[in-house]
Amino acid sequence: MLSYEPDCAEGGEATILGGLKTKNVDVVVTKEGLGPVMAVSCKGSIGAFRNLTNRMEEAVGDCTNLHITYPALVAGYLFVMRAHRQDAFDAAALAEPADAGSEKRAIGQNDIAIQLDGAPVESVVRFHNAVRELTGRRGIRNDVSRYEAAALALVDTTSAAGQVLSTFPTEDSPLRIERFFETLYQRYDERYVYSAPDLKRITRRREWSPASPIFDRELGQPVLDYAARISADVATNDED
Image 1 (spheres, rainbow, N blue to C red):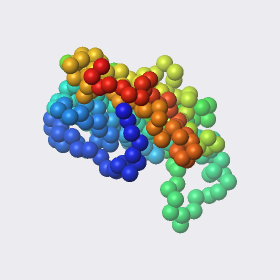
Image 2 (cartoon, rainbow, N blue to C red):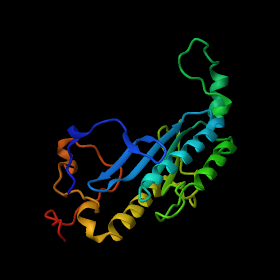
Image 3 (spheres, rainbow, N blue to C red):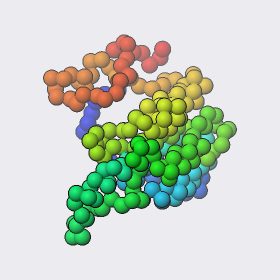
Image 4 (spheres, rainbow, N blue to C red):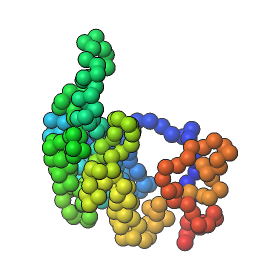
């Protein structure tokens, strides 16, 4: 069972021994006796989308480096960028000239992600297409340069600030953020649970107890924005 212990949380990245060098990764799941079984790299860009080519090179190298040492590792790549809109940029430029003495970073034309017609700019589309070719790794003997799952999220900066755009990537894209964790969990279960039933006691995914205080609204716990994995039996036996 999972338990809610916020005081046990720590910040920082985890260091994984790669085939070429050690790598600090944002989110790492480690299992006793197996080592790292899942790793998620989180990247982002606030603008200057002409530099996305450099990010692609980093993504390929990081994934290859980790899979050389841990072929069964389930690797994820999550990239978030600000969806600066052309119309908002034009309106701001007309309403208030840039203040040369301001410490706030000015948004330039190269930072625009969404055109006037609502479509993404060409550099963002190219980046999406490149990342799409880096995802979809299914088996441990597949291309080590591919991620098991990847996602691209454009975050609105205008009226719905903080919300992920629903129009891009498109519904049929494998990079939709809604599919990201689902795919990671599926690859994990295939490799570490279904293919290794003798290790089930160690590798199976943990569940929340329905009696956990995390679900007690009277304690002031935050409302979850996802569906929690709740156990059907409070007294689940690890030997089943």
